[in-house]
Length: 113
Image (cartoon, rainbow, N blue to C red; front, side, top):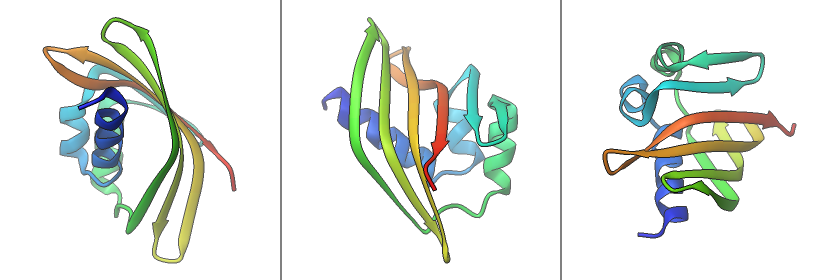
């Protein structure tokens, strides 16, 4: 599987996942910058456990940049829908390869609407 497809698969898994998904897919020192706050791994896990999740998500215009061996940046446009609420943002995630698995080390969201 090519890297772009694998990282997009992980992003979809995280977008529809629970705290357990984040616990498994984030590095121990992960940092997630979302509107209004920066979350460490424990805070992100707790936030996802409290979230109702998305009814639908779209990831558009993905781009991957290799940063170094075992490190990559994924950017894309995210559209999520939860009931009548729609969220559109530019997303960026840095992944690192650890023990043969890609893990999210950093994630940032810039809302567009």
